[in-house]
Image (cartoon, rainbow, N blue to C red; front, side, top):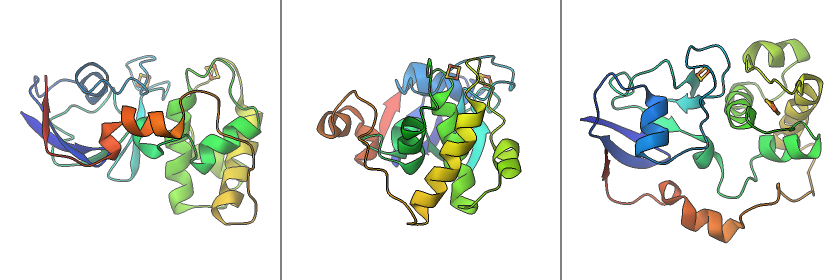
Length: 184
Ligand code: FES
Ligand code: FES
């Protein structure tokens, strides 16, 4: 049994302790926003935040995540309103979108500690691979998100089309701390 906090909610995983966190999140907790790309730590599609640090969830076991605070893309905002999400949309830095959740987690982690990163700092902090090649737009989007977080700019565009804020709130119970749940 591995216990941790996922998106603000206490969770117990009744799984082999060597199970990669990626599979526990996707298959047991149904948090499928975290993507499987390579499984070997190269692509960053599986990036999540663990105790405020961006980590590849395919490389960390649930035993290693025991007692830690995990945030997934589902926990970063209820309605896709995080500045990084809004800036990625505004800068059209998304094509197929497969890499996007991992990029959001890397960028959000960077901006927590450095809200005004240089181009080089962005490239160093966001190692995620994008087979669609959004890199130039990605750098612009992260800088724009930083300006939003520093209250130098607002983005009036709505978040990407999809579920409403109300539906998102219902669909993501992890955002509404409740009693401990067990998943297996
Ligand atoms: Fe984890 Fe690629 S799936 S780094
Ligand atoms: Fe397609 Fe990055 S937008 S892989």
